[in-house]
Amino acid sequence: MKILGIETSCDDTGISIIDINSTSITILANKVNTQTIHAGYGGVFPKMAKIEHIKNIEGVYEDACVEAEYDKEKPDIDAIAVTVGPGLEPSLWVGITFAIELSKKLNVPILPVNHMEGHLLSPLLPEYEIGKEIELRKMPENAISLLVSGGHTQIVSSKYKVESSKAEYKILGTTVDDAVGEAFDKVARMMDLPYPGGPAISKLAEAGRADGNTAPSEASQKPIFPRPMLHSKDFNFSFSGLKTAVLYYIQDLQKKGPDILNKDGIKEMIACEFENAAIEVIIKKTVRAINETGSTHLLLGGGVAANKYLQSELEKVSQENGFEVYYPVKQITGDNALMIAIAGYFNSLDKKPTFDYDSLKATGSLKL
Ligand code: KG4
Ligand code: ZN
Image (cartoon, rainbow, N blue to C red):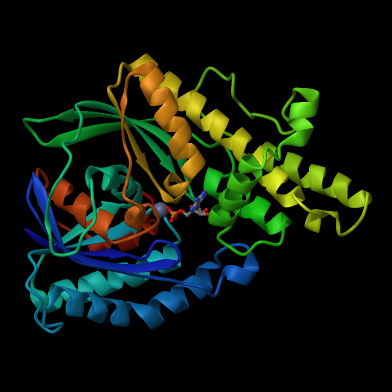
């Protein structure tokens, strides 16, 4: 089945074209345009994001058609998969409107996709190469997914039935305030780093760790930042208190001298201590979810999945606890239309591809 995927839920305009069946996939095209306009603002402005999507989507579509060697007027596709939520509503409508117009023009059905299911299924792709037939990983029968992005931090259990090719998901835990990626972004902003701050923080943290630059906690044998909800019985997270603790720590430091943040090693140390705190909570809760549900596999997805420290800590605990981790390839940790096309395909297996545009409009909500 040939599927064109569309993703516009936040600040990435993505178009992909895949040829997929239940065991393998050929990526014919995968294009994404990440909006840079938000870099100086510390976050994404929905109205600005919408305008950028409108400006970019046609060009991204044309680039994808060129990559797939398709005629943009008559691409050879069987269905269009499009993100319908969760996300920024003005942004989502750009992709949905584009999908509706294209579906009418080509007379192909639309497969509405939940963005988080896209992240959840992204680790089924074991490698990334345009034009090559790649064998997909099989969905494990009993798995835990850890979805870590700028909008979500979720632990989801999935029970997959081979006979029906269908997974039943249950959200075991979620954040009660900020998402983990959002906390990375806000801490980055406190240290004058551009948006999105996750990659910059993790790079500083890596340097700090390599230099043994975690002096305050080592000296007192006590971490300087809290591990919120580490011992709560549920699988929920909270990152707002951690973010505020970092803010107060920086404000205290600045009393000693306004330029202290730029002194040698200070930013590295703060980034490292913050990352240690955030990742420790995520890892411990995830391992508990795996052990309590008797899951054999962990599926990792979302922008923060690119974090190297998270990956190396997961590697350690997976060996200690005897479960296997499916990591997403780097090209599809952040938002992209490839994961949306993959999710659209798996959804279409037992559902009739439909798209009830009128009822979607009537409810006024895109949240799934
Ligand atoms: O999945 P994604 O692209 O968009 C959402 O659906 O939110 O995730 C974006 C988030 C941003 O908060 C970004 O700072 C974070 O992922 N991120 C990282 C890293 N790379 C991206 N966070 C920590 N470490 C990274 N290496
Ligand atoms: Zn996302």
